[in-house]
Image (cartoon, rainbow, N blue to C red; front, side, top):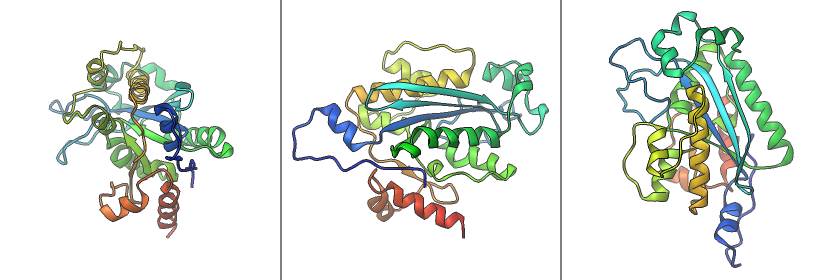
Length: 269
């Protein structure tokens, strides 16, 4: 399992708010984001990415751009950012609507890599930065769609097996709500940035821009005292675990490794 854990914070000492946050959460958070092909349907909303969707939502297409950024919770800085263009199953999926949405030119996909190679690069990053150094980490996504539907579907089609760290994550929308007692949903990541009166960080493509925004939200929430302590768990079928007993047993950073071991054992059956 690829998720290593911190010690339980000592609640009997008087620590500053930042010290408590550092001790009770992961060492690193990884903003993890994709932009996908736009469904060939004029009624489909090509809005971002991986927002919370209704059960009857239309499929969100294939991943064509994958981005991530590593946020160091102790130093409170982004220490590394990467993004990779993903070759779609068919060039016909790179429609004018998809290219306009992603803010990419069709020619740049001549240098695209396979999804399998991109996932391997991400796994290598996790090993080199965290696992080999016994550091804890967890993914942070915008909504649930990327890890519950889009990525699993693409990987299933291409015979790619996902590592255990893809089964435990924070949804930045829900963490935002916890921090600011905000019950609604905005239309896009940019709306959350605007709500906090943060200046937008522009990039020449959507995936990079929105992934930077997720990292900025992580930074702002952390500075405002929010602690990322209760991640969401997925079963081997990539469904969100809602059983209360399961959350009571696995729902904190100290027990997340047990969940990863369970998921791995189920995958190997």
